[in-house]
Amino acid sequence: MLAWREWQRWDSAIRADEERASLELLKTMLDNDQRLEAGRADRARHETLVRIGREQRAVLIGAIGTGALLLLIVLAVYMGRQRNARTLMAMELKSSASEKELADLRIRRRVSEEMHEEIGAGLSALKVRSELALELETDTKNRERLLHQVTMTGDLLASLRQIIWALDSGRSTLRETVAFTEHYARSYGEQQGLPLIVSIDTAWPDLQLSMEQRRNIFLVVKEAMHNTVKHAQASEAGLSVHWRNGLTVEISDNGRGFVPDNSSVSGNGLRNMRKRIESIGGSFELKSAAGTRVIFSVPLKATEANKSSIRNALA
Image (tube, rainbow, N blue to C red):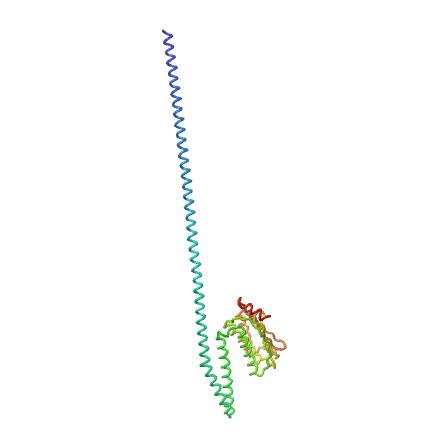
């Protein structure tokens, strides 16, 4: 009996231990399942967060790309409009300049016609009357006065013709400028009794000159001829006009050479001549040895349409 009870006690103890071991094992398994489930949940959340992050980055990149594309389109449209605006403005300025130039040409033509018709006709009539009165006058003093009046009227007519020529846009070519300058120099030499040796090219490129270029070229030749007559005490003068990749002009004489007077009038005249040539991009040179030589060059650029004429002129 005692042994039976002891066996029961040990059996109960063993079953209790087994039950505890089973419970602990079950608890351990439950804990492991919970940890695994928690790990799977964490991994699922992480994967979800990663996926969301990737989607957000993709959306952000797409938005940035779309924004950049829209910005480029807006910039291209803006630049196109600006370019079109600049082109339109340039066209309007060109049109305005052309209209202004045309208006200036009309004004210059009208002024030259009015000067020719009114002032020129009046001076011509005055000169004719003065010459007729001079022929009939016998008094010495009156003849001197009338002769002075005829001379002054002739000078005014010559100056008027020069002004009208400078205003005449239809005579603005290089060839016309050379021809007018040559005619003046020959006429002035004849009036002053000064023999003039002329050496001028016969062929010229078809170039258009501005009014300033024509006027300054002519006035420098006129001033040089005037200085020769007034100061040089020369018995002969020369005029040389040639094309050397531009206009090259030389006015020479066999007089006493350049000697500035105390009043500096001649010096001022030379400074004015130099200033006129340099203002149109040319170079001016004065040489005084065995006479005086005034040499100036004006570079003249040819357009594409003029290049063939230049080659023909130099052939």
